[in-house]
Length: 95
View 1 (cartoon, rainbow, N blue to C red):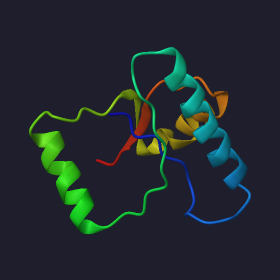
View 2: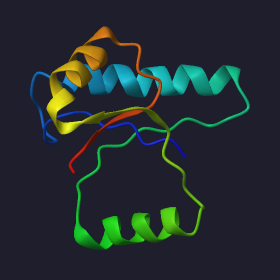
View 3: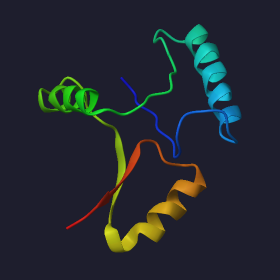
């Protein structure tokens, strides 16, 4: 399972073109590899986050973390994200 998230809420706005492009990319990628790619727009709620947390605790879902930054390194984290080279989630830790 790969969860890809962006910034912003669901709905028709400037980011909708990117979402549609993502759906097309998933469809095309599914045609050439053994894995099946799907896309969806998620809305967060407590029940779903609880289930996801339980799955992660059980080791059934593992997030892909590319890099971890401290809160005072947020600027560096954003710069890294802007390069487009992140291959997983970029995490900001609060200590």
